[in-house]
Amino acid sequence: MAKLKLSPPWDTYYQELNVMFKDDPTVHVVMDDDECEVKLYVDSGDKAEALRQLLPETKEFGGVTLKVTVVPANASSQTRYVYNKDCDGYMERVFRKAFDDNSALDDVVTVRGVFGFSACYVIFKKEVVQYYNDNMSDINGLCSTLYEYVARDIFKPDLGAFYCTSANKDQSLNYAFSW
Image (cartoon, rainbow, N blue to C red):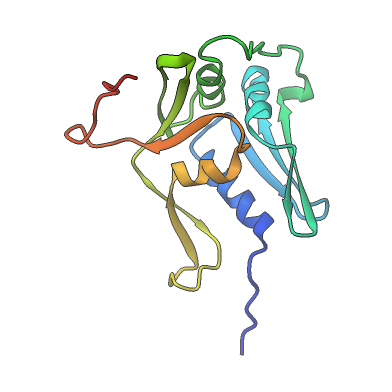
């Protein structure tokens, strides 16, 4: 009888990073099981800096700590993209830079409202994505999900961004709501 080996949660995190950047020609995700580290090799220093601001440096899974490292091209980060956190539209600019050349992203919209509250909506392509996760309820062991759910898992929880999926044209409010 074959032995079942379940994927550990840090492998699921790696798979989620991999599926998020699978169609981005400038980001390459590599898992180092021996060091319990996932590395994102990024062809642009600016994009690498944006991803550093969005991704946690470590991710805790019970007693296991996964290190998340963003490595810019030629291991140089000389051309750091400067983000002014106090500037309006800060998160929108960071997400746009991080997802430059990535077809998973549909749009990023900052909605400014009353009382000084602004909301940043990161809108992903309306597409089911799959990654291996030894899901016993799927004949192929795959997890089928949307980019918005992957984003909620992989990015820092305190970014102040909302993740969603593009709507059909007849369902969309065309970002027409305002506060």
